[in-house]
Figure 1 (cartoon, rainbow, N blue to C red):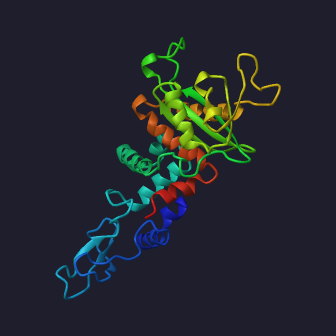
Figure 2: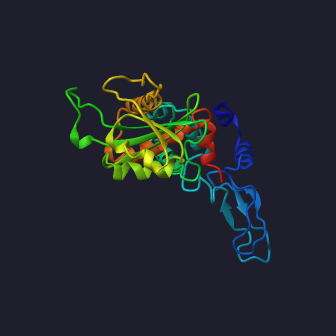
Amino acid sequence: METFLIRACTKELIDYLMGENMLKRERQCGNCSYFMQLVTYKKSIDKYAWRCMNKTCQKYKNYESIRKDSFFEKFRLDLTLILRITIKYGVRQAMHSIKNSLDCNPKYIECVILKIKSLIPICDFSNNKLGGPGFVVQIDETMLNFKVKSHRGRSPNNRSDSLCIVEVRNGIERAFATLIPNKSQETILPIITRQVSSNSTIWTDEHRSYSNLSQLGFFHQTVCHKYEFVNSSNGVNTQSIESFHNEMKNEIKRRKGVKTENRSDFLKEFCFYFNNRSCFFDAVLNLIKI
């Protein structure tokens, strides 16, 4: 796709974006409501614009940008460049690599990617809850902070805890993660009841925050990590949620850390990636469609 973008002429690129619903295919004049014509316009960065051709309209022959009401509207960058940045983000190219591969001010690249990230929806399964028949739900908390440079411990000022929930069948189907201020029942149980279907089978460790799950309509089973990682009597384990934790922390390492104030946004972005990992590129393109 990037090869096409590099080789395509302006009109071919515009036709492609309209065909993919990234630009509007038609536009009505805001004054007379007549449909405008797509015409060449040398003063536009895109070399094309919408133009009202209704002679009775007060805005007769006025131009409107083809970018209006689209993802591209606020950018003064070439459409090809914006799309190349989007593609590189969609194939999970590292930020430093994107900056090195494009002849563009790094700040512009950051702005485009920040705009994409702003369109990512909040991870919330309250209308289509995790679990239910045929699934096991595994739940655990994890810290997002790194060891300090001396490798002798973790900075208490850098600490962030997250509650993670995964829906498991043959593997992890869907995942949820959110920051939590503490690990109390008052904090954790309302999150679980919002995200997990009642009557679901839930596997956790024996942390006291989960002790009342059975009273809330869940079939709750535990494993005691002090003695074993897989419950020898019934096979209960938290291996899938630990795998999710590992992948999340590897992503943090890949980014060389995530600032404390950005960790909530990071979890939103990571859950979006994880839940669309088999089609992440298409999911990113869908974000920028009209």
